[in-house]
Image (cartoon, rainbow, N blue to C red; front, side, top):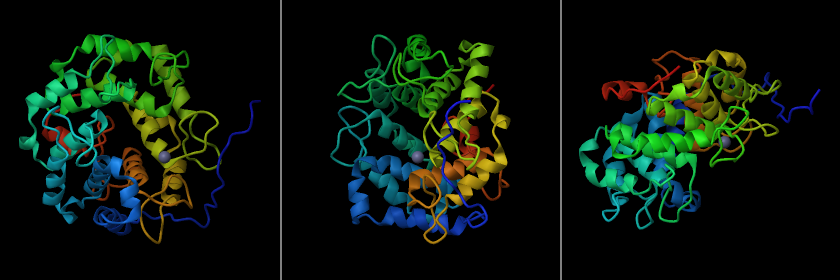
Amino acid sequence: MGTPQRDVKVNYSEVQKDLLIEKHCAFLIGYGRSHNTYEYGATDYLRMSGIYWLCTCLDLLHSLKLIDQEHIIDYIQKCYDKNSGGYSPCPNHDPHLLYTLSAVQLLVQLNRTDLIDKQSLCSYIKQLQQDDGSFIGDQWGEIDTRFSFCAVACLKLIDSLDTIDIDRATNFIMSCLNFDGGFGCIPGAESHAGQIYCCLGFLSLVQRLDNLDLSTRNMLAWWLCERQLDKSGGLNGRPEKLPDVCYSWWVLASLKILGKIQWINREKLSKFILASQDDETGGCSDRPGNIPDPFHTLFGIAGLSLLNTYDENIIRKVNPVLCMPEYIIQKLEIKMQLL
Ligand SMILES: [Zn+2]
């Protein structure tokens, strides 16, 4: 026998069991409004992604109409960097691929792709691709498989995938495949659920999942379902780590891409996500009893959507690759490969 699992204790007889839709919406809208609070200032550099988390979550809960969309569009425009063609997390910061994806996702979601300068965006992304096919996130030159995902996701949303060298980009992703079937951030780096999601998402968007043979797919699916912990039912991101609601998303979406979502115990995971809601303020936290934030609220709700815990009239279907409402992806006729 191996070492006992690290897990958290959840008293399931006492925790929240119902989905607190109205409270979550109020929490998300309040978060967007609290511009001058310390919390908001402290996470300045995350602001563009923060707006994406809260808008996507509201949309999944059929409540996007509750926010001031003009204000958000205005903000995105202020984060556009004319010189590079990319977007920054907040005005007067440097652009980065991560926030560029959030900005593009938002503009697509708010039906304002007319505001995107496609040509500049394409050249911004193209110049971030390196000779080995990898992508850097900005001019500082860090390489990470996350950035490969961001590059193809942005291009796919504006129907311009042929801008980059897909063969070389795919070769780089495949060079990050480990013996356990998982992926790391660079070749040789440890497997991690977040990176696995990005690499599978990349292969799905460029429709090259066939690069993974059957035994690799099975090994990877096993690695992913071993992330579910026996007692709490939550999922962790790597062996020996505590469960965390955001991994419901990275792991579940990866299993969905692999066609193996049924390998997870749905009921136990749904309970863990619901127990992570804050029944006073609304919002979800990383695990029961902690402080809620928009990031874990989105990934908790998106996880429940993938698990089909609720009817579509309550939580919209989410697209497992782009983490956006499925109706938008269908409207744009964006094709991706799912096994
Ligand atoms: Zn987390």
